[in-house]
Length: 559
Image 1 (tube, rainbow, N blue to C red):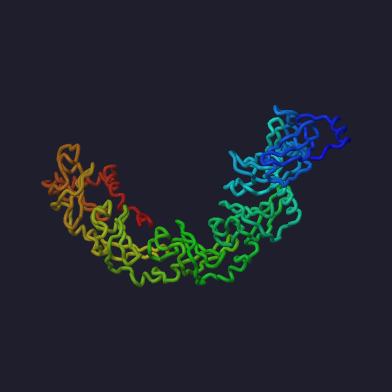
Image 2 (tube, one colour):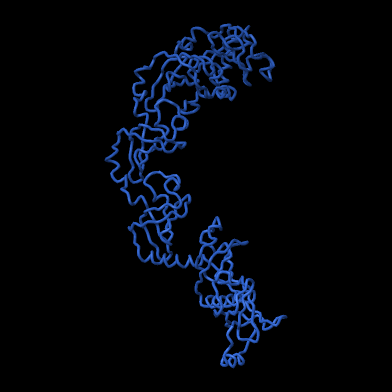
């Protein structure tokens, strides 16, 4: 080692050495464990060799070190190269923090809540500050170098908190402004799909997020944006609207294509046969795509002339190829009405030729309602027998009294209504009306026998020959007062009575049990008494009992 010059000795004798300060020193000797450094003090300092791991050094090199202690127990100066570098870096970092600048750093590893970064000193990068979108895997950042903004410095604890997100946001803000200043509606730009929602897609336009609404993605039906795009996909889009104040951009894809509805009426005139694909089934019909961007609706009522289709899904499936006929077009509302049944002849067009009025038919009872029975004449074609047309004579409250589903029934065609697609049938019309000759078969004074078929509060109905009913009013059952009909008669009882009234118009036969042994004068008197009952509430009650027999047929009920 060379001896210090006189000038150096004089200069060194006047130097002030403060512990904790950074001083310059010269490497005197390099040993396996330590490096000896001379700072011009009366003794040398020793620095562990580990502090020089990443450096190539040699004797005589000048270095900066931190003077930790002027003299230890062995009389040597305590020095640290690492701590000198740390102090210098800390001072630089603090200055950058004050100035609001950025620092570069290398991600060293993962710690609880974020990442540890070396920016000259150790700094903490919280997970929320790593990126704009929270990262899924922190390992992808380890070992990489980024720029950071210093957001917090604790000088006492020597803690630093940094943010990469703020750097990205600042860059994006600058990019956004540049983008907004340079685009206008109608421009076509390329972006990257950033996020997909039910209502549309967010597209990253070089730092600017634009919204591509689902209705602007395709002229055709699109159930979800994911059917057309995927996250990360590069996408050319057209600028539809720019709001510079709110920094919002509306985008479109379909606007870059021809609108298929522009000349729709010329391409699909009413009556045209079209081939398409079923895209969606709903309760009221089926949507069919006849070309890309153009759909028509087949209403459930337009699927068949005769089949009773409750739901389109019973006969159609999504993806099925289908032929149909254009029934109508509404260009303004972008609606096309389609029909399938129109491909075949309407069986109701010549129904009167196949089932002329007066024709006798046979068919199975398909359904029963309160007002009648539906009889299948052929597949999909029903006729209806009103309850009042089941019998000339019997008071039938409900068709189930004489019919059940599946019965083979013979009837005659009474009326055909093509417009409303109804055929009226009659069973009683197969025979002559027995009431037309009733006054020849039953005369006042005749003795008749029959069985009690119904009991009412006002009397009892007696089933006579040929299903003709007669009425014994409660006053005609016995000579004395009778509180209840059931006190004297029950359903099924055999009864002998005398005819006291025959009303051809009202289709009513009045009977009397107590008049069985009356002479002609007494019989006439009872007949007059029976006539006197007609306007009373008792006999009005009888009419109410058979109210269903006169109800009008209401189409659609029970079918």
